[in-house]
Amino acid sequence: MVSRTYEFHNLRRAFIMMPDGNLLIAPKNSDLSHEQMLSNIGMACNEIPKFMVDVPRGYFMDGELCVYQGFDMTPGAIWCISIKGYNIVRNFIPKLRQEFAVTDNTNLYLGVRVGNVGTIWEKLYKTTVGTFMR
Image (cartoon, rainbow, N blue to C red; front, side, top):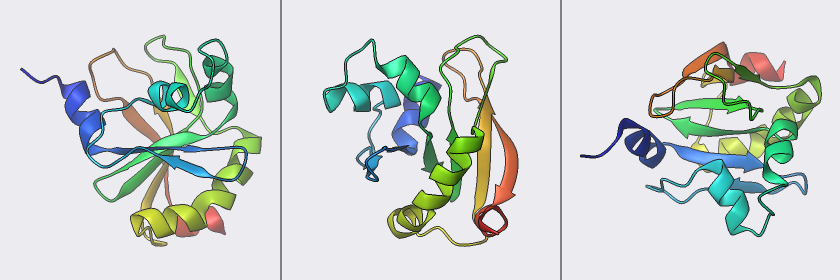
């Protein structure tokens, strides 16, 4: 039996907004986690938690974008975009538009509530790309 988490990871396109300006994107139909993506580019395991708190990441699925920062796995914890992260996300919107055919009307969530491992987590702070960019 295939888990819901695997199905979710396989259906979404994960991405990380890298500090060098590149958008690191998981291949289509990939179940790679953000941690695995960072490990695959050579990041040390002990560096990944701080990186995931400091750098926005997220996914595109079902015509919607969801971005967040965080690493606290406590159920109920909120992973949201930091003040500094807002500007980073704004700078990456043109690349997200190109990669995922995002428009001003695309829903954009700026956080998630951590759920139990194996569940799909609640998306938070809904806006649209156009409203966010104003």
